[in-house]
Image (cartoon, rainbow, N blue to C red; front, top):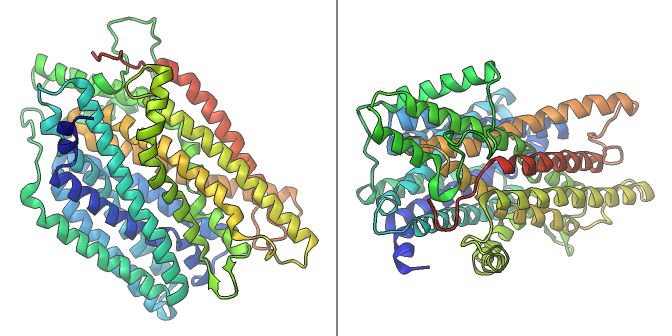
Amino acid sequence: MDSEVKSAALSKPCVLIIVVAGVERFVYKGIASNIVTFLTDVVKMSTSSAAKIVSTWNGVTSMLPLASAILADSFWDRYSTITVSSLLYIAGLVGLTSWAVLHSWMPSSLLFLPLYLISVGQGGYNPSLQAFGADQLLIEDDMESLPAEQKNQMKSLFFQWWYFGICSGSLLGNSIMSYIQDTFGWGLGFAIPCGVMILSVVAFCCGTPLYMYMERNTGNKPSDSIFRVLKEIVTHVITRKVRLQTRDDDPDISELELEEKALKDEFTDHREAEDGHDTAPDVSVTKAILRLLPIWTTLLIFAVIFQQPMTFFTEQGILINHKVGSTFVIPPAMLQSSTTMSVILLMPLYDKIFIPLMRMFTREEKGITVLQRIGIGMVLSVVAMVTASIVESKRLHFVSEGDGTTHQLSIFWLLPQYILLGVADVFTVVGMQEFFYTQVPNTMRTIGIALYVSVFGFGNFLGAFLIEVLKTTTARMGEGHGWFSDDPRQEHLDKYYWFLAFVGTVSFVFFTYLCKYYNEPEAHGR
């Protein structure tokens, strides 16, 4: 890759924002990765209740970016949204730390205030920060001297390094903070992320003179455009007019093209050709978002699978032997770091080995399309669920033949399922970021990021719903106890994992079918 592209993608503002994003992931993962243990050990909740609460909290956290995206792209700007959201984020962290220190005198219900304050803060912080970081590329991205192929390579490189940065932060948060929380206490374990977050916000503000800021088109307010788009989407859904055109349909209807000619470019062309107050661009935007919804829907089960390390994988680790030698105890949540470690190690190999290898077969510059990249990760997530089910069956086998304990099985048996999800992460999650970012108009890029994040939000809600339904249904069929039980001899997480593997396979089949409705541009671009 040319040094010109590299220098543009790795400019000082981009590097600073990627580092700040990595620090935020350290903070969030340092809390979220082990929060289920905090709820069961300190708040004294049951395993299934804690899992539902964590899933719901993660769902709200992932859904709020949709609202903050409208705020960032319509009424404020991304920089202001980042600074205000960071203050709410810090307030939530201070409240959570205070509750952990004073939990003996604090009602359990008060714990949810700081948790959801963190959700509100992160909901505005994350999508705005990523879109703001991508804005730093726009000056170079719009230069006529750069061919379309290099522009797309530069975008891909930014998303690769962005994800590398947040995975590095996640790795440190999962490993270091879970050990501190289990060893030195929850007060210190929550106070450190709070202090680190404060320092990162200060560093971000110090870089203010370096940033590039998007100029707004005052002739047509983004808020008017966004709300007209939302109205159009609701109308289409209610009247059941959502439809995917095939490649043989009317050629005057624009097809969704990936990478070189995204719908955001079509939107720009319309705005240049039409009057600034015309609603024709809004129709294009509405069609674009509506056509993204089928792919968005098929990714929900992947999001359900993706949340397992923070819930039932961690509970699996608690139920088996997590000692190394006679003294050192591995916190079960620390195994989540193996997922992020897989991402960090595989990300460079993806560019250096996988892409060149695939070019030999596909003759495409990027090796595989974005949708193919997403699909590969979906398959790997299903394999991870099958692996998790086999390991859980082995644990239950030890329980049935032993004295009721499961210390015969080492925690390292859980590593394959974590690593497989890490590999799936490299393919699907990075592909989702690039796909949703490039398929929305230029003025709605934060909403594109929010659409990607909202997959995990709805996925967490769906996961909590599935837990409740399966818990009730299987309890009726199992003489009072179902798949989820606080008794390790009676619960059957293996059946739950098989269920997720099945619905994940069904989702992948639908995803593969829908891919034929989306065109990949020719190699030379259009």
